[in-house]
Length: 465
Ligand SMILES: NC(=O)C1=CN([C@@H]2O[C@H](COP(=O)(O)OP(=O)(O)OC[C@H]3O[C@@H](n4cnc5c(N)ncnc54)[C@H](O)[C@@H]3O)[C@@H](O)[C@H]2O)C=CC1
Ligand SMILES: O=C(O)[C@H]1O[C@H](OP(=O)(O)OP(=O)(O)OC[C@H]2O[C@@H](n3ccc(=O)[nH]c3=O)[C@H](O)[C@@H]2O)[C@H](O)[C@@H](O)[C@@H]1O
Image 1: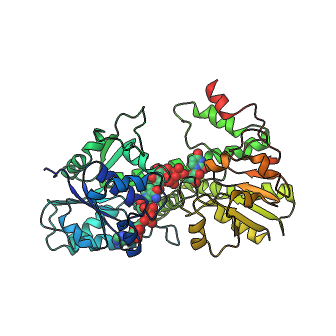
Image 2: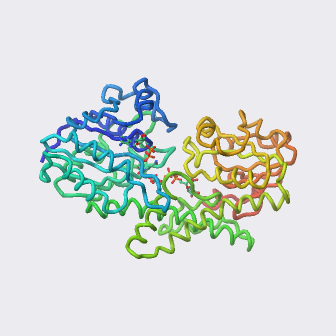
Image 3: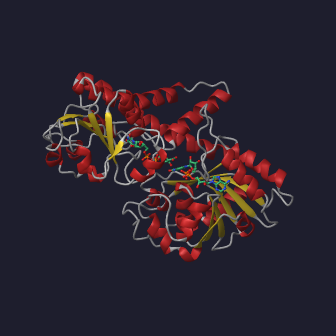
């Protein structure tokens, strides 16, 4: 079978994954219609405004205006060769992913499928078996449905927020699950990405070391499982580093040196061993819980994943314990938090550790001030249930503070003139929950899994020697 080039593609959902996918497919030459039910966000996109903060995405989308259309009208599906589902799958109350948006998107697609060959590709992270379910739903609701022409494919997404463009344009692998003829069509769609024959955009240059992505073709179920297993493994790697960091503190070892030392074993690898406040964001918590709930459905325990979750959320208490060791009580004290987004270079606040830090500090009676270079406006909307004073500038956060907690390692914080700012505090106490401070500063500094920074031995020194 043959896929038109350029292909007509519909991308359902304009979140982090939908916008990244639309931008990528337009950049490699396809004609893309982005569909979302959120009229306000579609209106913003039509006016050239990107509704999320993702470095370089606004420039990439602006460079592709001729290939990109935004609409709330599903009838665009009728002319599409390939239809991507990129809607949210948030956790339900018991940790099971809520599939209502996927089901509703699939039902809307079903109303508009045509009688030609069309591929429905799921990029949302969904429980194993959802692809089959979507196929049955389409069969039931599409009078013209023909399994020799209408295919459901799983193509999980591995981008990280904050580095979405680079991750999408230069991926380690492209995972495709489904029937062989549908996967052949998908490799035709992705040919410029697989061969890296596109011109790298200036906002995301091709790394020198990058050659081409691997293409992994599997069954629908295996592709769906690969996504969950990848996120779960990364999450447990971080929790492993955090668990070891607690013991490091007790025996006088330094987690930065230990992580560098074990990470040099290529079987382990350096990445995702950064100890600190633990993971946050929309996916690691949701997907580890999602796997556990899938196990529960099959009467199968997943104790390693449960332990990874427990260790992760314990880190949020460890940081407050460190603060209390110095201040005894925080009642009436001014505690300033630097960083609200769950990681740098994004405005995403989902499951951000800072949320839980503020909750704990509110309970302990502290007066909380918080700052973030990008996420403050979003926090004003999404965290109105919390009690904190937003600091308009980082200087304002330091002024008269009894303690500073560094929660997100934005470059802006790494490059601060710490000593000048600390001079304006009431007490120079820094809880560096991301271990970013490398040299001694004029403050008592608490880090995670190590003594205060001495300056003479750093992770980088270990890497060089
Ligand atoms: N955020 C990330 O970095 C990554 C997310 N994922 C997965 O991708 C999926 C999407 O995640 P995000 O982009 O973060 O979600 P998001 O919450 O940022 O965006 C979802 C979008 O879908 C729209 N939507 C909901 N129902 C719809 C419908 N019936 N028709 C059209 N649009 C509809 C919403 O209005 C929203 O704009 C999730 O399953 C997530 O687990 C996978 C890899 C990375
Ligand atoms: O499914 C998803 O949504 C995505 O989830 C993660 O991406 P993301 O959550 O955007 O960001 P990460 O860079 O993975 O960071 C997640 C959290 O882990 C924390 N982290 C990361 C690495 C580390 O060593 N230590 C650590 O605490 C970060 O601070 C952050 O809070 C995965 O890395 C992506 O591959 C995946 O596509």
